[in-house]
Image (tube, rainbow, N blue to C red; front, side):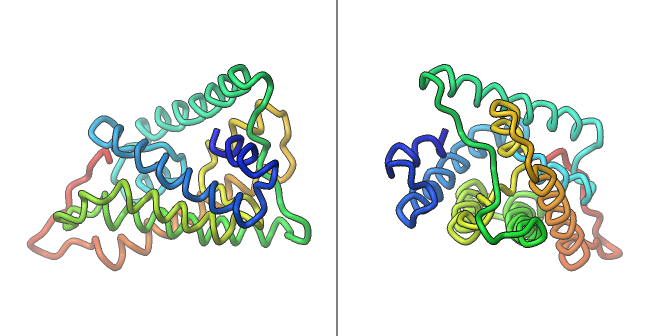
Length: 214
């Protein structure tokens, strides 16, 4: 929906500076709200890559991850279908690479951007030592996504979220280079989980970190 609104506001210029800023701000605040309202229910999982990162770090069970992935993908498809119906046929275009951007360029972009996102999730929401910083987790997560869109949006759309890519791909039935928007985020999420866990979550002799269903 944010993508459709950005196109309308900028006369189909979502790749222009104004369109990119509009998309980044819209996504940042929308994600802030989405994580906030779901944080006490499911941990605020709206992204399969974030769920995968939590799984790699041992903070969520595999069974719960499967349920979250199903819900996230179904939610994305239903949202895109409702958007298409409500707007008289308009829908968010499937993610695609900009001219001159190869699949390997895009893959690296998605890895790096999702690393930043999942690292932020670990630092502000998962880490049991987060203390009062956990209060700002939703807005921190929203802001890192907005910042990443400003950086990578002009190159490959800056997905960082396989569900965000999946819904538009299904509704428009456009699957060109779709694998990039799965592999990149999952690799970035796994690296972030491993790095954060090794450097900040290794329990000492007198401390055992709990396993949570974030």
